[in-house]
Length: 210
Image (cartoon, rainbow, N blue to C red; front, side, top):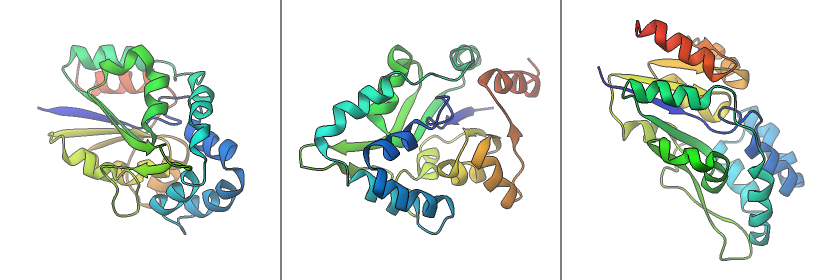
């Protein structure tokens, strides 16, 4: 059986919602306007995140990366990668946030993931310009489009927030915490609650009878 894991980044691999923190810090007024509307699903992620990002001056990009650099990774992630490697199961990072943030936090771990799909920025102009190969529907990074690139018999999604909802609805197995669990409850989609990656590894070992 071919299996693949799709893992969110902000608030999932990182302990905190790093991207939301960046939006609040570097665009407080615009973020204050759009974040509550996105969480209430009155404004799409695609529209809201783009509005916030494109209000940030390009000169701030270095500070954004420095702010991100110290973000801690959630316990058990490297061990989960070791386990998945032993089973020949790829892990793809799918983030609604910025590629630069993902890469700087993962650091030396980055080559161990199969791919990173996230938002790219053009910082050559006065303000950030958003580029996303998977912009579509309500999302700036349409995670179901990314999933379609990696056909598998069993798809496993790991996430924590609204950006992971469509991915979670599509996946065979979903590990959900925080806001994602709330949204999946609304859609009556079953999921496995989790706190750290050790929980996920233990569940998969039992599921796969290892």
